[in-house]
Image (cartoon, rainbow, N blue to C red; front, side, top):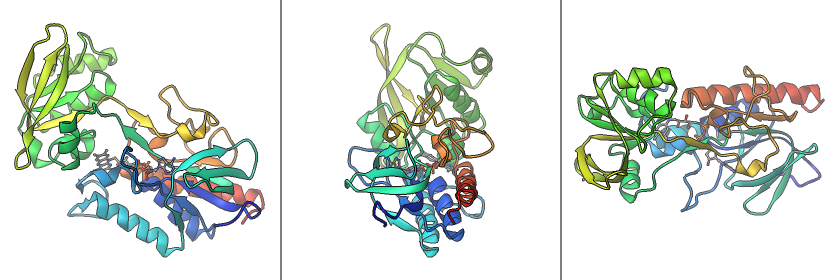
Length: 328
Ligand SMILES: Cc1cc2nc3c(=O)[nH]c(=O)nc-3n(C[C@H](O)[C@H](O)[C@H](O)COP(=O)(O)OP(=O)(O)OC[C@H]3O[C@@H](n4cnc5c(N)ncnc54)[C@H](O)[C@@H]3O)c2cc1C
């Protein structure tokens, strides 16, 4: 790691698929990248390795015909980056100064590093209800998840009842997706009307496998460590009554929070808080020399493969931009 007088060429913030892919490409381009992989903290959803550290099995990343565990996959990404000499700091970035170049990056250990280019790959954390039972079954991989595209095809949800929590477009998409596997699919919504666009609402409301449970909030996810999730306890917010509904899967779709707080408003964000790219086909942001990749810019696809693809683009964009500045 260099002191303030010798800036890094490129610093990469984040160690999910986007960050490690950017690191591999940047290292192979002789940029000697430094990755801030994040720090382990008891009160945070963010951990080194990113969101896949929370999943048991990844079955849709090409190259693994039998699937691969999320932890194992992220270890392989990290090992591959290290093979090319990527330097890693196990700390969170707490603030950045993007007002002048080289940029300044300050971490949770109080160290400030300067860098000519910065790649932000800090992901977006799924929002959870915060129920202890939800956390228990989620961490155990026993039927609670925030990604139907990722986990919906698992055998435990086949021909079984599942619930999707939320009332926006994402919840409608998750519910419609789950009708390929599950029956019935309950949409649990706390109000008496959906927030989703008209077209999505129509598709959901007329789908024979979907049943909307209006004015309802989950109070508890029920089940055990052998069978996983078996039911949910709901409270009807207009009558105060509680009921138990049998389910095998509990899918959260109440939004994501992009991890951008440390930016302190220095980059343009969209209305949902995702980093806005200057050019949607590239990784450039409104600050020259700052690039962004992965779920922190993507509210649409949110997959490991798309994040990795964007990490590759960010490293190539950074490399070309550095070359234009005469920094090679
Ligand atoms: C339960 C679950 C299952 C999933 N299953 C699949 C699947 O099967 N297939 C699939 O393709 N996708 C799956 N996904 C989606 C996939 O995990 C994400 O799309 C992907 O991880 C996004 O990669 P990323 O690199 O953009 O961000 P992330 O993986 O979220 O990584 C972000 C990284 O940034 C770090 N970070 C954040 N803030 C800071 C900071 N201030 N300083 C330093 N570091 C920071 C975090 O610690 C983390 O390392 C799943 C997601 C979840 C939640």
